[in-house]
Length: 228
Image 1 (cartoon, rainbow, N blue to C red):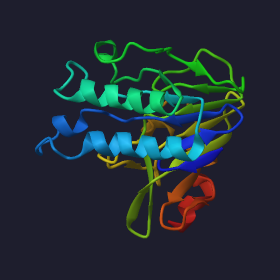
Image 2: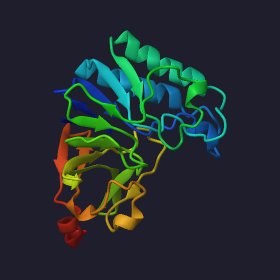
Image 3: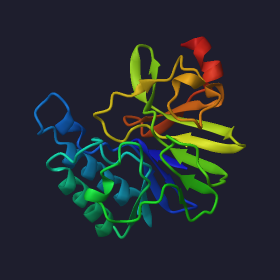
Image 4: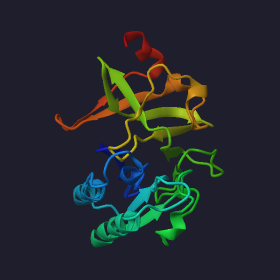
């Protein structure tokens, strides 16, 4: 598994996975709309496609932000994301999240509740509900994890070996940079929105350091809390 810019590439499945794009979050905020949301999302996806050239791009839920309507411009953002994937020769698949009730209004591609990757053992889903499919590894989003170190909050991946029904769980940070992230430092199981996190202590945070160009692995939360 290779981590980059709040996403992950799984070589055995030849799939790029990202979650929680929340397209339309800028329009729903209390600031004026031109925050560059569309160019930020599509530009970063294009950069990931250039680097990994995956066969598939899988959005693990919450492609959209609004529950009850599609804000102006969101359809164009989704179209641009799909065109970006198509232009790189990658298929786009979306597993709906709890924010995606209006998904069919802007996206008519594959949208299974759970999606098994080509490696056969990895299932992508949003993580807001317990999955039906058995897997060796679940890749989810939903909680927007971040870790606070020396007073600075950084988006992080959470990796739990054997954390759910004996399967590994990889929780991705929110891909949108408009989400502040939720600091997991002191969170117990009841504080997580995803039911796949039953014992946070076994999950280790991983931070992608853009400046250094490397992933920084930390001890599992059960150990790390003593030093934070």
